[in-house]
Structure formats: C-alpha cells, structure tokens
Image 1: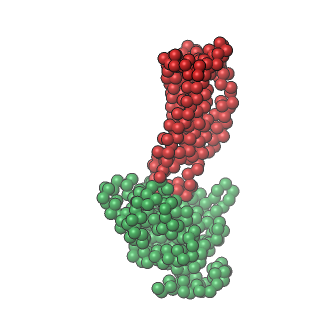
Image 2: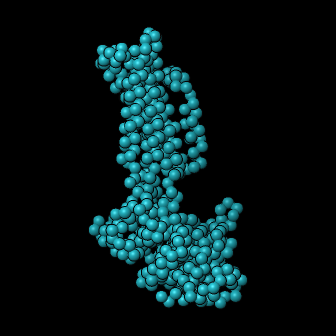
Image 3: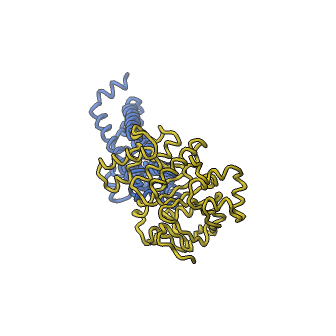
Length: 210
Length: 258
C-alpha cells in the first residue's frame, strides 16, 4: 500500500500530470480525427488513393515512439514547445486506426443502399451525411477508441522530451529505481486508458443506428 | 431509323456502352411509350440492367443518346432527373437506419415538402402497396422480404415520378410472395399508368406485367413484341425462351384473368 500512500501524498502533482496527459491525448485525438475521418472518406470514394494513404499511415505507425519524438525535436518551430511536438507525434500515430476504420466503415455500407440512394437523386453530400456516415459511425468510432488507448500509452514517452504528462513519474521512477514513483505514473495512465475506452465505447453505442 | 413517336417517354438513340474492352451494349434503338410497361427480358449479362441504368444516368452511354421526356440526358441536371424517376432494385436497398416512414419520405423531405404533407403521403403510399399504417414506425430489419420490397416500391413512388425503373424487383422473393406482388403491381399499374421499364429474366413475369417485351441478347436488342406476339414469335431467341419456360405461359399472358 506504499504506492497508494505515495500517490495520495503527491496527489497534487499526480493530478496535474494526469490533466497534462489528458490534454496531450485529447488534443492529438481531436486532430487525428479531424484529419483521419475526411482522409478515410476520401480514400473510400477514390479507391486509387487508398493504397498510398494507408501505406503512409502504416509506415508512420512502425516508427518507434521514442525515435519519432527524437526526429521531430530539431524541427525549429516545434522543438521549442515540447507539448506541441508531442501532440504532433501522437496525432501521427493516431491517424492509422482512424483512417483505416473510416475507410472500412464506409466501404462496408451495403452497396445496394448506396445505389438506391444515388438512384433516388441524393446528392453526393446527402449520400455521405445521411447514409454513409451514419451507417459507418460505429466502425469509425471503434477506430477512434483504438487510437485513444494507443495514445494514452504512447503519451507517457512524451515526458522524455519534456512534454510532461504521467510519463514524468515513470521516467523519474526508473531513474530513482523506485517502483512507487513508476506506478504513480503507470496506474493513473492505465485508469485513463480504461476510462477513455469505456467513454468512447459508450458514445459508440449511443450513436449506433437502432 | 423509325420515326420517333411523340408520346415516347424514354428513347434510346444508337446507344452503345462499353467498359474498357468489353462491349456491353451496342446499337440500341428503343422507345418507351408514356404509360406503358416495357419489360427488358434477357439472360444475365445481356445488358438489361445497363440499359436501365442509362435512363437515370447511373451510367452514361459511350456513344449515342438517351432522352427522357424528350430531353437528352446529357443535358439535364442529374439530380433533378433522378428525383423524377422512381428506382426499385432487387436488393431493395432500404436505409437500415431509417424507419419505414423516413425511407419513404426521404425524397419528399429533401424536396422540401411540409411535414404533414409528407406524413399524409406516407400513409397513402403504405396503403397503395398494401401495408398497414402501423408499419410506418418499423425498421427495415423488422420486415419480411415481401414487405421490404413493398416499401421499396412505395419509396420509389413517393415524389410521384412519371417514370419507374424496376430492376428484377421481385427476383429475390419466394414464389408465393412474388406472385402476390406481381398481381398487385399489375393492378397498381392499371391505376397509376406510370411509364415503367422493368428488367427480368423470367418470361412468365414478362408476359404477365409487360405491355411490350424487349428481348435482349449479348448487348443487342433482338426484338420488341407484345406478350401475345411473343408466344407466337418465330424468332429463334424468343421461341427458345418460350420452350425453356414450357407450359402455362398462355395464362400468364392472359394476366391470370383473376
């Protein structure tokens, strides 16, 4: 119970780091959704683009987290603000599951439904907003869910470049060889991941047609 | 070329359609008269569905011209064109996330009809296709195949289009339901006098519903005949069909007289 006591003793700092963590994850997920969903829609309609776009997102995904943070460090207008840099890196990582699920979700809409809609004289945007997106929304959101859970874990590494978040405890604990400190970062991060997963899952069910 | 009758609702003029190296339709000349039910009969791959999709511009001809109500399709606004044409397909394609009434009322809604007019229209159409008003609030997955296709027909009729395109609408139904829907559709058409283009590979259905039958084979129009003429035709393709379907066709052509 040492850990619990340690966390309670440092609750101010733990809370602040948790909020920082949430800020990194929340903002990057928002950006990734704002970029990934339209891109996913685009490649679902222009299938020629799907291979290059998904391949690029895949390649980004394979870069080790620490390396990507390092790569971005020398970018002048970013390097100065570690949190911006972390948000950019997290956004890049979150893109793949969001793009892929948007693509899969839209392609998964029954072609007969799309054909009927088009034949009835729906415009392409009516078709997208009234038919394709509502029918794909749960698949898209499960992509967002995966992205959030990945981001919560990955954001701990952001502390290595000084972006703050719960990773600070983990790195400090590693340096001090003190498990209590490591866990003071790891436990809230795990809880955050769980809560985010449940939260997006809840939205997913609410938005599901029927 | 034959003179084009003034009453033609749909005309195909020297229409051909090809994708890459495959010629799907060649040299099609055909007029569909206003108020008639023209059946496109042919086997899979004969070009029936392609012909149908050229009418509402889901496809555009490689050469030639399709005219709807005298206006060349290439010149008309594609969205307006489609909203004036009802479209019914074999897989129905109801919007699974909409109730029956939203499915039927969608085109009226985006056309800006007032709420109560849409509601009245939905009730009226449910009755037209033989469904009770309690169906309005159901979702497609709660309906049987036959009920779904009835909703499909109601949806196509929603904005009162003059032209109705039907692509094997009853093809996926069980024989009893199909028979029922064919009979009802025939009676409905007696009343509504829409210009209908109906695709099928079922000769019995063609004889039963068509005022004329356009027989297609390998992307070409073989012949256009009335049901009675079709049964007596000496055309090799037509008689092959009659032989394949065997007995009992006369009664289909007599529309069961029921």
